[in-house]
Length: 275
Image 1 (cartoon, rainbow, N blue to C red):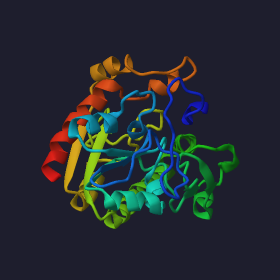
Image 2 (cartoon, helix red, strand yellow; image 1 turned 60 degrees about the vertical axis):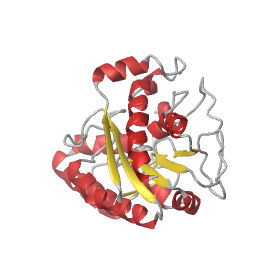
Image 3 (tube, rainbow, N blue to C red; image 1 turned 90 degrees about the horizontal axis):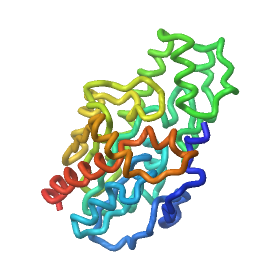
């Protein structure tokens, strides 16, 4: 599971911090001088293995600073619980929120690390009572945990998945309601929201989120931008990624340069209507 973290990398992401936040964001660090656009999201927004992820490409065409607040393996929690992120987003002209999966956040069944949301911390008594035949000390990552729970019992796992879906909607609504700027939601994936991804294999993101969930939070946003990368685009975009031999398994789960170029184009059209 070493590829769950950044580790040693061929790219220099120039990591930086803003304000009192403990999160290391991708640099170079931008001055928080209005006007600017803020972007929050997970691994794709951070731009792992990409020299120029979509926030940087968007900045190039907008002629306005774009603050990249993406974080590797982030769930909603890492942003919703960070006052600095909230302040940066609220001062922005527009905040773009990449839709992240429902697996990397605390819920009634288990708790995750407040910053490294992909890290499983502990199971609740409720989950332990449902899965008495599972030793939860064996798990360190949410994907590993959820894959094992589903393999143990599909019937019991349905309850876990439903909880994740409901918790995601509630957490997203809460997070979006605290942001004082205009919000654009970004769906960036290899599949459309109509097909809910439930396979916990690396790359099937955003996990467990579907059209109904997206529709539930859409009223809190000014616009919803959807970019679904095709297999050919992912294959072509993979050629533009920068990674070492050790990083290749993780890079195979990324959407690539072509998808990011499409996002920048789609966001440019949306943001110009709102700015």
